[in-house]
Length: 75
Image (cartoon, rainbow, N blue to C red):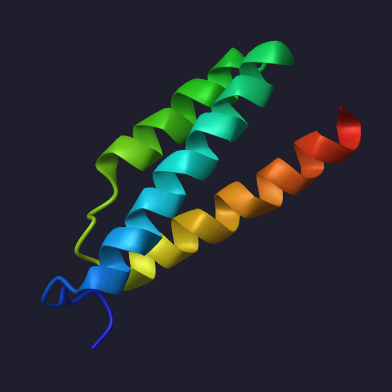
């Protein structure tokens, strides 16, 4: 059922923690590249994600991973 939340599981904590850690790295690279508008938008998305919604956490992680790859190539 898309959009439904599910009971919290230990692996959910790990996935959510990974999102937060990746976000910090992406935020630092965006700040260094003076992309403050994008930084503000991504920060807002990270803070707003429902940590109990596995699909939302996974989608956000994928976005952050993609952006991290892009920024790492540019650096």
